[in-house]
Length: 111
Image (cartoon, rainbow, N blue to C red; front, side, top):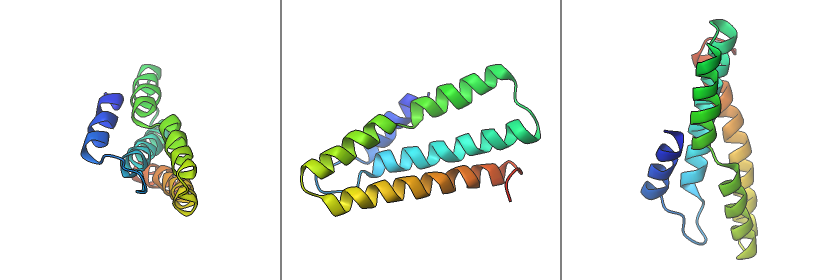
């Protein structure tokens, strides 16, 4: 399901040379929010091991994509879009950490 959702976002927001890879950024942020929520639920209410594997490893693993992020960053650097590549890296790291925090807050775990 995660990979299908990732594919849909990729079709909705295609990546073009010289542009910020919005689809990967969005998929990774949303995946971090879901993962943060599930991490919070695991800490506050518990989560059955089978649901941990299904949702945290399966869905989030298929939805987020570090390899695509890395390839797109490499492509931006290779094409000479150094500033955009570094902006993409910074946005990805910061927004994904914030996504984890938001997800954990929604689960009632983080403050």
